[in-house]
Image 1 (spheres, rainbow, N blue to C red):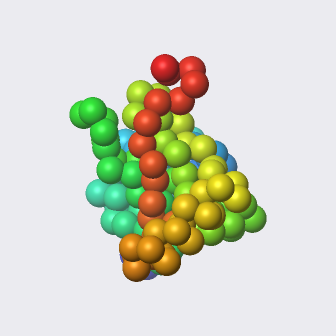
Image 2: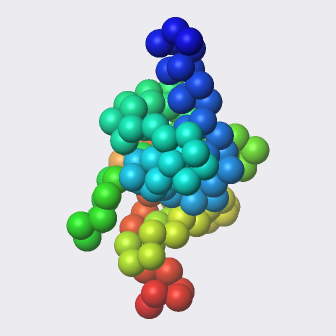
Length: 134
């Protein structure tokens, strides 16, 4: 088996894990552990490099670790049009919430009009505490 075929297989496995867990944020370690438990181990460095590439391509959202937690990644759900709305992220449990409401759209319009600044919804996450962690 050639190196590029093996590498492609690894990428397919990583993307499959991301797709199967599209409602979760996963660290490179968690993805590597899931793949190992499936009997298809992939090194953490390979996982990280591919996730960085997916982030650059706009397929995955990267969340910088908070409170000593590792950086995590989540597949961008094209059906939910994640690039069109903001997200909330709980700094305690890490849960991500879609914030697709008219009020927030108005806030974005206000910021654009009055402050001459356009928010990039695909990269903006508002941090706070969810109802369960308050």
